[in-house]
Amino acid sequence: MDILVPAALENTITTDNQSDVKAGVILELANGPLTNEADAAIRDRGVIVIPDVLANSGGVTVSYFEWTQNKAGFAWTLDEVHERLQKKMAEEFRSIWGFANEKSIDMRTAAYALALDRLAEAHEATGTAEFFTNT
Image (cartoon, rainbow, N blue to C red; front, side, top):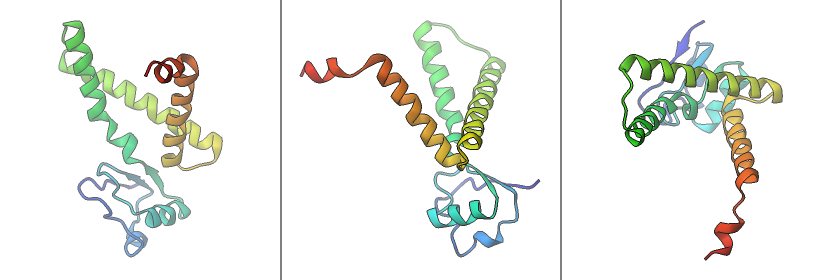
């Protein structure tokens, strides 16, 4: 299966050119490379879109790893960073893929919905009442 990787510009794939996409998978490495209309048309054709919010999260994840190491005063080897990143990215892909299939929704919607579910769970666990009452 071919994979198309738009990796530079926003709104690269539009309704005008989306029919030229022959790949079965689009891996969004650019921020917002599909217009909303093209995204809908692509999905209707059965193309799997791995959304930018997931595909681009590797850099943020490695930044978190760096922050964690700095706070704890230790350093991982490059191989350890790669191993941890691969594990985390694969885990999140599987979570989003599974959620998308379970709910019969696309991966972009699944990524956002799963994030909201996780925020709700954190909110329920910790609450915000103290924040709002101590102003």
